[in-house]
Image 1 (tube, helix red, strand yellow):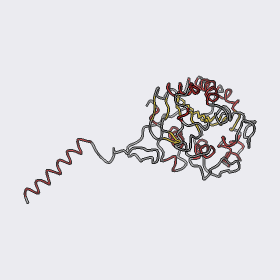
Image 2 (cartoon, helix red, strand yellow):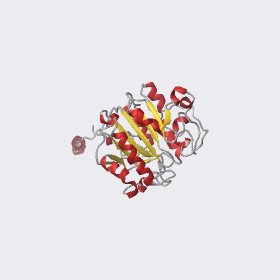
Image 3 (cartoon, rainbow, N blue to C red):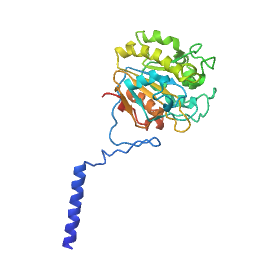
Image 4 (spheres, rainbow, N blue to C red):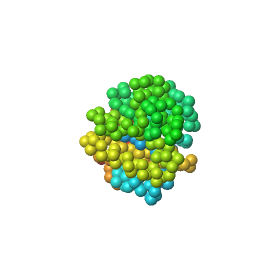
Length: 306
């Protein structure tokens, strides 16, 4: 019996020594993040910078695989190499509209088509921004006039998520912030540019109806104007370029970050989604998440120089 007790005690001592050597504790164990299940980490995540301005450009209907190393997407690849892109970022669903809704609503709210009258009485990112006194505008290329309802020529309502939320569409003070893209140049040069800027190119320039090269050319003309504006040359701002959806197989899409605090020549292989992008915006400005979708999705903090 004495030998048995001695053996048990020695075994316990060995286990305690092993734990101490490996520094294993419940507070620093972290599970892998996969594309199907965002794991909960017990250690605090890396922080997202408190950006002065965030600019998001939404392109259309091209999977990541169609853009990588494609000569027709030379500017996109150049920008991704210079700054950073996500190699494991997925859209939420198909088709277009529910992805747009998810990006500012934190949910698709059951929308599964490009419907035009499926309006929503739901909280949204604009509620959070205005509560925090953060200015915003959404710039829609080829939109006939501010707060326009419907589709015409190269402007598609389904690519304007703001108009679908009742407390934006039915509030004239808010709805007037959904404006034609032609207003952007003047606003960027103004004394107080909006802190949150959303840009939807028209149906041709976003690659929906036209070629990858057409969209790449549009970006090559417009992105430098944004990056050379005072909100990037004199402020700490972030530019995000993403796509609404990819293919039906894995829905992987390109997402590029650019700006003074973004890492250069960086690729992230972590699993992210549109909900992660929304959560990243919320984290930068200390906004309360909208739903469990964004609150449990990992913020994209690895893109930034801390």
